[in-house]
Length: 197
Length: 197
Image (tube, rainbow over the protein chains, first blue to last red):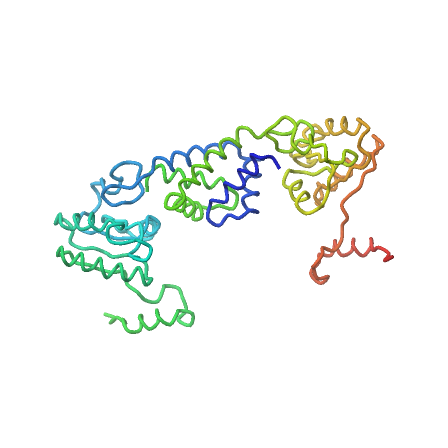
């Protein structure tokens, strides 16, 4: 196989979930049928890797110093939702009708991995809470051990700035069957049962 | 979401088997964790889309006028294996110990799609058979209706040039169970049963 083709197959393996066989299939597909879109991908990918940085206000991916969402005048400035990564921000934007602001930690508290309050930009978050505009901080870290520890820390930060901290509800997922819900979730949902009006 | 990020996700969908969700996952993965390899992919992809053409002898992908395989002195020049596409050439190279030459049709005879002898480079193939060096032509087109029709045409071409045409054996795949082999294959394997020495 030609050197350049081997290089292309190897390079495609940087994509998550793509092994040798899929990479080969992708390379052949682009070469045989879709060179134009392949070139376009190369160009956009290069530009994105170089130009996409982080918004100086919310730390989400942005190619401008302040992202479109932070500079939008139509978003509610009294509510701030804190997420671990841009992926979760995208999921919340797509699933909910939330119209407030965001703050992206780009990680979770994990001292063993060298991720402390400074790495998560918590000084920036504290400054933002100190501005006095925010009334509620929705903590949407992942429901993992580290996510919960981070949530605990964030709640303290909010209270110190006299901002009301809230957390996404835990419970039984919609559309599931109780039989297959894990024990921890079921116990939590049972304990936090809610009155029907 | 930022314009450039949306563009990147859209561009990644040119890859076979990649939908919106996977494309988003790939984009976030590269941005968060692997910008260097992302840049490398962009560069190799751009170069490959521009520089990879087809070998003037075998029509396989090559960035040089004649590919490494065709110009190699260690490959047997008496045997020529004809395949439909570079993917199949790669599969044969990886699975078998074949040391002869190749010819890539870049398609199969399919008049309704405008693929005739000229599009498959059969004039080039005829010239090559006419050189008198080749003794056996292995026809390795796919065992589909169009592949079989192409094989039939190729066999005539070989006989006209006094070259012996051969075809990959059909039969029961190794490691399968007879119960699950399709009827056509089983009937063929039964009819072509071979004597045990």
